[in-house]
Length: 314
Image 1 (cartoon, rainbow, N blue to C red):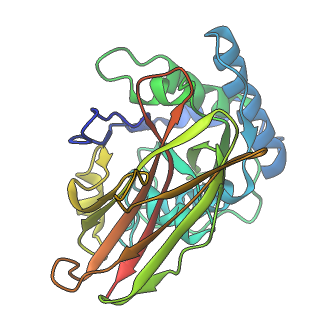
Image 2: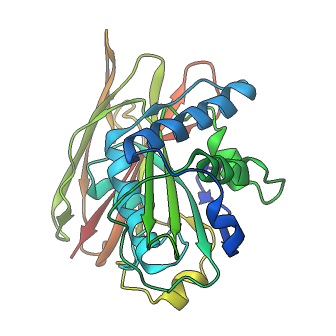
């Protein structure tokens, strides 16, 4: 889902509706499960790009790293019978994507197709085979949404997206088939130096990278939330949309004159930048920290997130 922010970054919200469709025995026979996992991913990508083209947007490519994160989440949902942007360990999309090696901005769509009499817990199917009909139904459920509950649709059609990770899982057998689908939309506008998975208060964190030509560094901010904790199925089923944390501990702007901040240099291949972030023990308490890089396209007024990664502070 798009990241929405005012010029002072007061609000950052990712609001995605969740699609869960308990269905009856009669629907089990719908379509022939003839697509392998790789074929199913390509078919979902085709459906996404068909909808984007019909709405005047550029196509997206399949993203390998985001697919790893999406597949992990789809597996967890299919096995445990829930639908949420959180998983059983309590982590959200940004952290899952970061752990998989992602460095850009990600926004998630989630869907599950479950039969009314399916067991709560069931193992992933030995044969991961999918039908075109059930994948088309999932995409149609996203695209048929209407305002104000149209988070999936807006996410699919977001003009900032450049690629997508696709995770699809089947659990159970022919009597208790459950399908979970996760779409992880990615905004790729540069490359970024790796961040450590965790640091200690008092450490200095180097945040650096390069943005593609035409994208300038607008600012960087760091935000805090509590470390994730395991969640029960009841808790997961009570979740809805997810958001980035609002508690900001640091904001950095490009250096100007004697003002320190983000060092920026223009090269032929784009904007290079770096910033040293001091995890001040006076204000950096233990938790999960989100590192945002905001970009601004030449000729535009509104910045957008080009990278959002997480690190733990202990």
